[in-house]
Image (tube, rainbow, N blue to C red):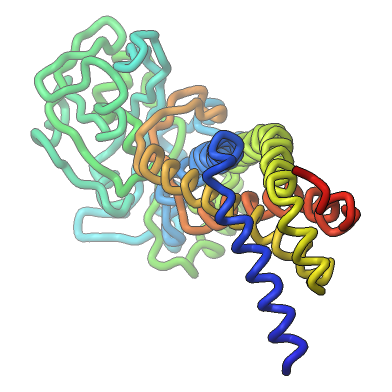
Length: 399
């Protein structure tokens, strides 16, 4: 055991010299540490956008909820049904029922322009006309301020996310709908799902406002159970009276979030990689300064019998320790700055704004710390090799 213990003591001794010399290198140490912290903060911050967006879409449906669109349509914007078709869908096998009838809501989807609170610029906001079962079809919807709109009246309720991001959506405000001005009577939440980005009204009132006759764009359905989806889908896709595409809501929203999530994730890794290159050079500069500041000490230890491997390991450990400190600092700052921060982005399937909260997860924090460790290891490798290879005699003659 003497050999391994002696080796560890050598590593500890050389590492101690490095730590004691930190005050002499305050500038380079601070530059490297904050450089790595910046890389980690940017990576975690950008990726938290993708995680938050994906969470909002995932919270928009459950396995026992289905969405029906016209055949060939991949979004509500290009779909359409007449009243007769929506009744056939509501009467299909597998649809949950109550004493009031099937839990199926035929819905109208239009876009209106409202200014963003943060910038004042106009943005597309979804306005959805719903039927009475809409609140039972979707799980977790509840009024959090004001009241529910009255059926048959020109009134709207707004999602809590839309009320937070866009002007004129507080209870008591009025919004422009077609040629009319409708009052906002309530604000609702939807468990963080996409519905929180929308404005809702009675479909029967919204149809004449936009000259839609008795047409709808989609039907949202509550199934008897998640297992009833296949029965429901088969019944509609084989019915000669219909031309319909049937989606489980969880699958529909997951597919629609994939493109934005992939784009944001790719940009996040690309930006972080470019910044990491600069951070690596910062770490190299710091560790070269560290080695230069203690050339004589390292040479003296090697003359006393300290091994080259112990010198390499100690320099690497110092570099990784500084990187871990910087990475932890960046991860902490990212969590404080981004976690729960509310924003909005374009939902490219509907060409409207989707509000959501950024999410800094433990997995993102771990990715940031791992990246910092890699930067520290790369930044310490060459200086460590230099420290181990420098001629002992020449180093001892340095003043």
